[in-house]
Image (tube, rainbow, N blue to C red; front, side):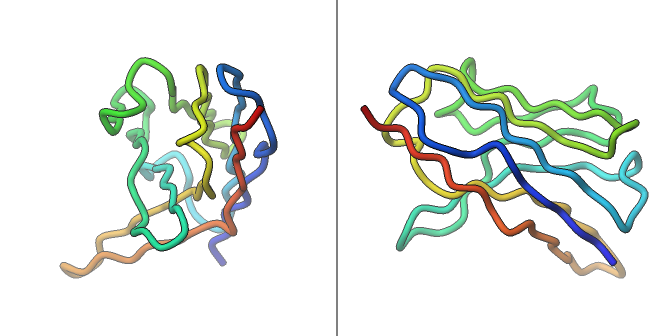
Length: 120
């Protein structure tokens, strides 16, 4: 059974940093690309960053480039999101994601989410 468990969220002042973690189980982690999404109330879930199975390839949404870094440790079955220079508009729930393409269809697996609040 696929499980994704996020941690590391919390309250931080503007300009501060947080590192989110997502512990994965139930599948061969090292063979899967992973992503972080976020969703604000009343808005669609938005892709923040993705990382290839090896970790060599990464992608970011424009608004976080240069401030957020996605990484992974395949020995620990964990993907991370280092968030620096946080802004109040980064306040929302962040989700870990695994997407599987099977017979032409996409299947998404989500964690429970972790709340990030940026406020003074």
